Amino acid sequence: MPRRLLRYVTTVLALLAVTAQAAPRPSLPASEDTARERVEHSPRHGEFVTVDAGGTPVRAWVVYPERKDKAPVVVVIHEIFGLTDWIRAVADQLAAEGFIAVAPDLLSGKAPNGGGTDAFLSRDDAVKAVSALPRDEVIARLNAVRKYGLSLPAATGKSATLGFCWGGSTSFAYAVAQPALDAAVVYYGTAPDDPEALAAIRAPVLGLYGGSDARVDATLDATEAAMKAKGKSYERHVFDGAGHGFLRAQSGQDGANLRATDQAWPLTLAFLRKNLQ
Image (spheres, one colour):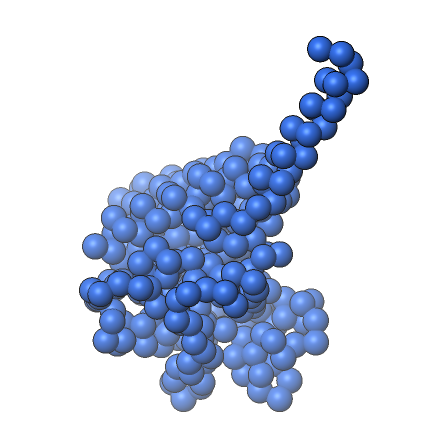
């Protein structure tokens, strides 16, 4: 093959690979840059509701699946950035797979003038506010949101949490705090610092991590050993080359984040279906 033609073919193949990577994948949650469009054009019914958490109103995004029978509830716990369009898109994707998804804004009432995530002037302000949330208050709000989800006429009696980053660690902590939880999914979040606390867990835990996330990955062996010592179910997967936040930042890490998403999301769905039947 002539050298000029070879260069042309190589360039075209590279462009096709980039295009394929960037194209929307309807079987996966949207990436951050396509999340708003996915939510705005979703055929599913999504709405904001207000949940009473011990006298404090908590705003939550609820998306319903298109199915005739009742569905299990998945509480989606946001990242340290608060309730973003991306988290709403994850909730929508869960509904597409047959779950009732409830994504609370745990910053409800914490912003100026009593607002939530979208009332903060910057992402940095939201990050600081999430970081300052008292754990007991977070658990109380999650309990109220879970109770709300299970009270819906369309809901079965089964529930799970699914969290990312800060929300991943919170999902793990909530499995400790709520013995009636049926399953917990942890995306690149750490376990509670006290290994003895893991004894309270009854729900199986699925952990999904990027192989280039040194801070979190350094904790995984100890978490696995502690869960095993307590007789708890803990399944972990580490995806080579993927970074922290890979499900949101799917175009990152030279394709490794998308490859991780391709593997992690089906594992998530299989785990939820198995434990929420």
